[in-house]
Length: 263
Image (cartoon, rainbow, N blue to C red; front, side, top):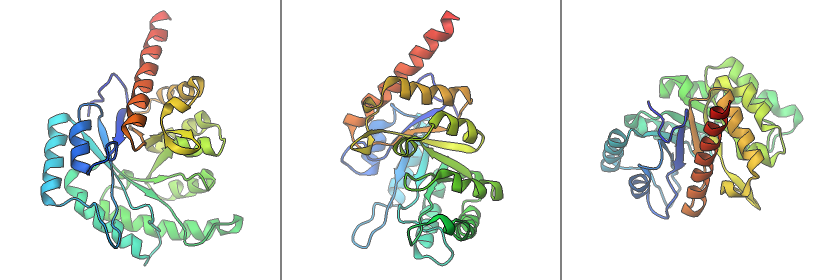
C-alpha cells in the first residue's frame, strides 16, 4: 500500500469530519487521506452500522482511491468474557470484514474505576477478551489496544508480551497526561500499527494548530526516526479542525525535506 502526500505513513481522518453520515464523508475525504477511521456505534435508539449497499460503496471507494479503513470498536467496549459489549464488537467485526480493515481499535474499559491493586485482575480479564476478538478477526496484529488518558499506558505492556496484538498510540492522551511522547513512540514503535494525533484546547480532539510547533515536530520526527509505516489518524471531528491539522503535517514534511537537502 502506498502512502500519498509524500509521507512514509498513511495519513488518515475520521469518518465524521463533516456533519453527515459515513458515506458522504468518505466521498469528500477520499482524495485527502490514505485511511479513514470508521467510528461505529449501536445504541438502543440509534445505530450508524452500514448496510450492504453502504459497505459495497465503501469497497468501491477504497479500490478507486487506494484507501484503507480502520474500524474503531464501540467506546463502551468492556473486553471481558460474557460482557454484552463484547458481542457488539463481534458483530461489527463480522459486518466490516468485507472491507479488510487495516486495523480494529479497542478501548480496554473496566466496569469499575481501576486502582493500583486492580491491574492484574483487569489484565487477566482483558487477555481472555482480546484472545476472543483476535480469533474473530483472524489476524491478531490487526487488533490494536489504545491507551486512555485516565490510565498509565505502561499497565498495558504485559498484554503486548502475552498476545501478538498491536498498539494504537494516542498522542493526545499522552499529552493530557504530561508524558514524554517521543520516548513512548521509541519504546512502542515496533508494536504500533495506528497512531491517533489531535490537539488540545480545553479538551482533546481539537486542531493541531493548538499544539506548539516544536512539540508537534518532535512527535512527527520521532515517528519518522522510528521508520513508522502504519496509519496516522488525525482524530478530529470537524472540517475546521481536520484541514489545518492536515496542512501542519504536510508543512512538517516539507520542513523535514528541506533539512535533509541541507545536509
